Length: 534
Ligand code: SIN
Image (tube, rainbow, N blue to C red; front, top):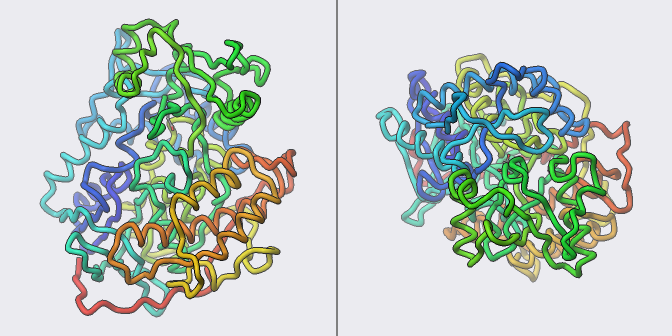
């Protein structure tokens, strides 16, 4: 029996905790907000898996590779698609009640899928249904100690570089160390880097930042996916791809279906293509959002199949059965993250990463819709199976480009990135950082814009690691991540998947490699007075 620290309570963290407890381990699960809050909870479309007779693992693999724009790790994709159906059945056993129709389990179509294979629950409330079932399962396991309102500050590393726990900030406002034999990071993505995002406010990339500071390799950080259709009202709630899968269309200010001229699959083109086309159309309209016309689907279908979106429209004073609704792209999902192998092992012994915090290689440069919950489930299960195996640090099986922060002109050097507290004048300000990233490292990028952003980011200082403010510790993470993302985006001199540069518009076949960044030396962590063994 080992002591396992799981950090994060989306699908990946909850499932890893349950699996680890069932395998006989003692588990502490910490989460920054309440147990049920996470990015998972807001997932709408569903979970893609080859569950149906007219589908196959090979077809799912092919669609995933195509969407990934040459940057997927084929071995990770195969694991995802082969083990996905079994993990969906596990979720059913844990109590997820997927929607049914006359043929059995109901399924939807989403962009860039060659067939309907996306299962969903509560219409468009799939994430909420998954989260509720797994929270209830965790609550039933006495071997899992849950600590809510507890934020990851930094990872604890031993002299040999192995991760041996984490420093956390508790609800009492005190930082303390939690020791563990292994840590499973499941902290999700970092939508808070951007001015417009579909993510909840907890998505501040804490795990990616802490892993990088501890010396883990992070990969493909330039690839941030922008969902084409967030409702263009404050809070930018998601409007699922599944709505377009059911037949809704996008229109410009003159009522024209502009996607017809953009791609043979029109509204069901890959996500990055649709997001860029909308951004261009918005430029032509002086920044006004485009509209999504779902009026042809009828009141009853919209209410029953998409109750979450119907409620969001109603809150915004919109009746989407009667009128087209304003939509615009918003930051949605980070393909990059902490580099892992096919067993969720990072490059640091004792540290695993599952879900959006990880870069498994399954998504490449552009994640296929509804593959994210699947990835979290598949690799959470694998991480726990790997706990009992002798440690082998994760390595990428294929070639990659190592980005040296220092070698890039105009960028902050390593001592500036991750500096524990700055003696520079300007403390990072979150809204200004979000505005900067949205305009310089968003849907469209350019070398000039990225270099200017890098220079601005280099001037800001980071709140101290010893802070007892959650917001300040999040800002520390966001500043580190913004610098790493901009560094990676500047280094990739091509356009590929979600990374589009107006100064390098073509995809370069020789750059079909992951990018990788690692801090050469881990931060020296000050031991806490009080260490609590998990
Ligand atoms: C959506 O419902 O459009 C989101 C699905 C996803 O991000 O995979």
